[in-house]
Length: 110
Image (cartoon, rainbow, N blue to C red; front, side, top):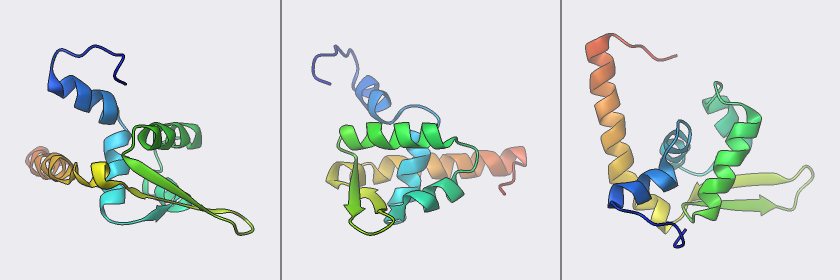
């Protein structure tokens, strides 16, 4: 990531957690360790391909840790790294803002 040139600290953050699904994945992992299947159920609107891609990007950026257990079938768990946990205030602020906006707009969640 250091080869890229940034002109504002927000660019760095958006580069790492930007997009539709990364903040949602991080918010779910903020609640605890999740298996891949759990994340799929929590995010039914995303495709399997997209979820895998986003998890890989979060892992390569050092925000998410992937743990593989040598079982049959293999069990994979995801959790936040120390850097990932440091995003908790940002994720909480996004959640609270969305909650207030949703209430104002009459948006409900399934």
